[in-house]
Length: 160
Image (cartoon, rainbow, N blue to C red):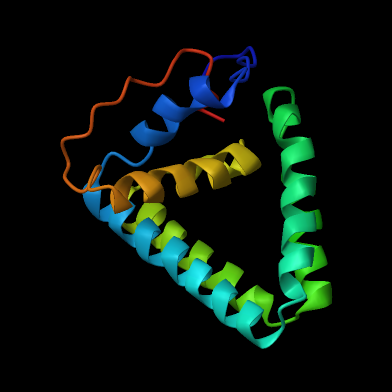
């Protein structure tokens, strides 16, 4: 680990290859896929019980969208906590979907990939990366270990 702090990624497009490199083992991506899709299905179930929840979910996404650009300067964990807190305040059972998604993601990182989730340094970009990765998997990509991704740029905070 270097004695000087490294610079942060300046955009999500710059971060994306690093995110993929942190998910280089196919089984890690598979458990992310299960967790993320389980969360989405659970959210749809909650919305079917309480349609007004969709309004608050849109509000939470708006908070995330406003904070997305700040990720280049500092970790935007505060925004994710605000988003999740709002949803739990409106519908306490929302926490089960969040726990389900993170359980599978962290199993992928700690037990399969053996690395530290990028969410600790890039909270919102990691969340967006997870949904982008799942969308690509739905399109038939990223299922095997042969994933074309660039190595992490020197501006990453790998050693932190």
